Image (cartoon, rainbow, N blue to C red):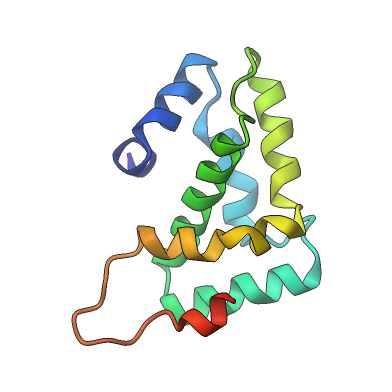
Length: 123
């Protein structure tokens, strides 16, 4: 439901190619994005999770899905092709450098009394 609310176009595309969301969501969410990612990337992501709280994990997943879509990784006609491409982007250290955390922060609700993401952490 979260993907259909926040990224309806991507959700529709995954349904079109018959790629169940669990196929791309299970591994990164169960391992907190640590499998196949360089240690520096994992540490930056986990810092983000600790600062922003439990919703940050889902925000990062949505940001990865958005990044995969912007790189046309879900354009194939086969679910397996899209799954493989999405797995590759999870291990791409350059994805974090390409403003992934900034994208993830946009999915988080603003805090009325300040706090939350320090943009210096993102850089």
